[in-house]
Length: 606
Image 1 (cartoon, rainbow, N blue to C red):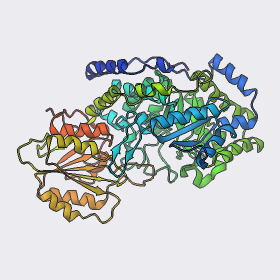
Image 2: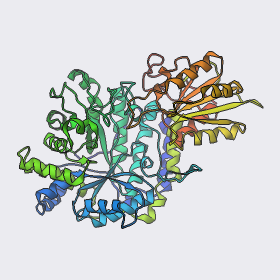
Image 3: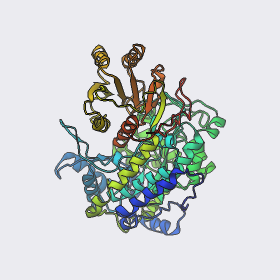
Image 4: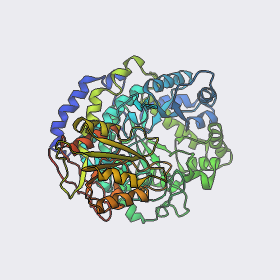
């Protein structure tokens, strides 16, 4: 399966102007070729890669082959050489001989240094995967220094996938993939566990939400394919997830087993549409769904553990030949019913190649080996997966160079031109759903009092930091207030009194999806407070930086803006739209029942 450069059809007129900005980016930093990156060809049928993989397989024991399939999660935090966590990680590589690493959060330099150190310890090159759904900055950021909330910087953070759905432009999406690949490879990451190809057709979905491009399967397919091409044309493997579709559920698979009880015909017309497009686009990897679809497997087994899903549907029917990667194997969607070792064996029997983030690494490797000894599957089955993984390492060029150049990292990661591309995408995405009072953009008059109230978790140190900073440049008297969304005893009467003394109150909500929540709804007391302010005639602008479906809880809100996520670029774009410095151009890629339809969005010009 050789990846070819895409031919995009129907690219909007905005793309012509946008191409100039793309050109600027290509001149400002280090090119993919300078990083050793090139168009990725991922296939179990490439003769050179298979020859190398087979030569390595011939030297490996069954346990060594099983270890290639197990990829533990690590952090890019600083740890001294004698720390227990460092000894544990180095043992995974040196003693257990794992085939890859799942990289979590940390600063760019520490991430690259740590990965180089682990690569040197490994007898074979490691493949490094990471969730880079919103760019390399989703993982490679320095965080915030407390108590002053100083942003320590890092890789480029792009808006969420649903923001790209609101912009509906393949050129923007392709460019996000390109920049993510260039920055990710500079850090030592080879596989991006994105794009999310789930169709978010359930507003109550607590874990997908804005991670999806939207509710239209064909739009998801188009935008996802563009991202895949952008990523893989620049040296990084893309991963379409979560097969065969995690969109139509109200259950968080991190916490329980979702069941999507729809017909096969519905799956063919909705959930499977984007994955077929991803496979046609040459996607190198597919990640499985820890959820049950009885139409595909009447046993109730989650997709990750189902032969019907992984082998019969994905491999045989859809013809996918790349890597099949499990979702995290410590999630309750698989462990609650099947346990740690049984879920590993069932995943391998189903046809999964890579088992990420197991509860315990030696136990996971032993479970793969024990499955052979118990007759659950053959040694050949394990060798097939090990061969695919090794061949992928060869295709990525890791057999020739597994290290990254630390000296060139600063010229690539977080480059200002890359940030400008993220800002351009955010500018296109801001969606004004309602402007019933004709407040937007703000008509600034001397002495106007504007109150900005932010509702977010206390731990979200970046919530409204860039938003309020941008507003303050035009509104020097801006009053700011923070509300902890986890506080059950918020003093809403006090907030009401503050709003009474303001001409306009801007309420920014960061309440939304997360891996550890069961609902995306805002606190009811918060929704009631918004409704009361509207009833009392206050001018309230609600900005959704979290769950875009918030309007369903506050249907009387006269002013409603969707910014799609809390990335700094999204905050700046939202503020600039409110101030009239940037036009509002986005349109809803989702339905907000029962108050707004897909495609809604007011075009506001400065």
